[in-house]
Image (cartoon, rainbow, N blue to C red; front, side, top):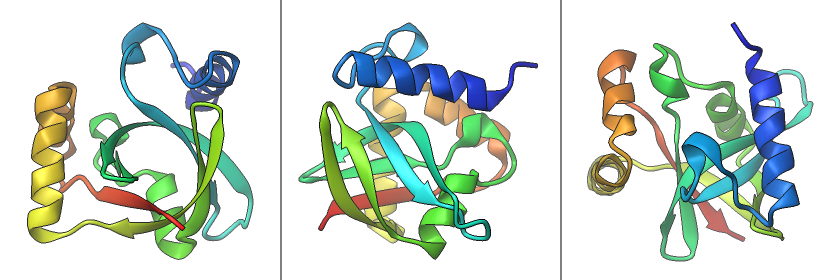
Length: 137
């Protein structure tokens, strides 16, 4: 099985080389590069994520491709919510917060309409997929 870090690194490099655009299975999808600090390690990491613009903010989704556990970046943002995202060629300071209730449902339902693969992730994950809002600071 390919190493997910290699997969992510290739997307990060393509994103940066093409002003935020990538091809393959993510072609045409809005994406950000999320910088996050390890909750235990304190190491800064970068993860490419599909996003949904929500006003001036960005929603990202802890689907982990349908895995039964939340992604590491989710736990890192809960522990360290002040961070940055790369959007196109811009670096934006943001604060992360977990969406709840009606807000979460509205954004999550829209994401499943926009990209039906997220509905499949929800089925296989067996957990509520976190919706995280990255608000500009």
